[in-house]
Structures are given as C-alpha cells and as structure tokens.
Length: 69
Figure 1 (cartoon, one colour):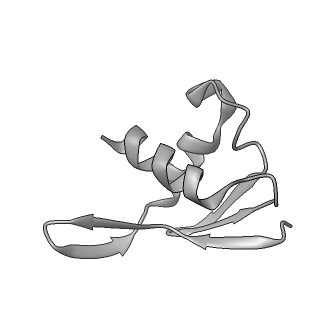
Figure 2 (cartoon, rainbow, N blue to C red):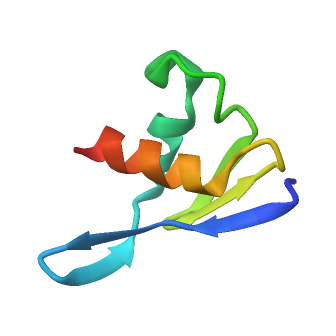
C-alpha cells in the first residue's frame, strides 16, 4: 500500500475514460520501460494507481503521456 493515489484518465475523441489497468501495469514495469523511476507504483484498477512519495505526479503524467504517443 502506498501513500497516494493517482487517477489516470485518457482523453480520446473528446471522450474521457479511465486508463486500462493493463496499460498502467505495462508502463510501471521496469523491464518494459527501462526506468526505475516508477518502481514505487502499484496499478489497482482501470484508471487508478497508488504511488509512493518518490514518484513525482507531474513527471509521471508527462512520461506516461509520451509513452502512449
């Protein structure tokens, strides 16, 4: 269990919906992204991820957005 929860939504075609948990799992895995930056994350459900205080919310949003595109 981590101290913070992030809501992760996707905006596509003007429609907002929760990000699939599978995508959050893939992004957070170090062997997939090659980055230890998000080791302190735990995807819980579609659109919901828990994170420790070492995870910067702004950096997470930026890097996840870049990873999607």
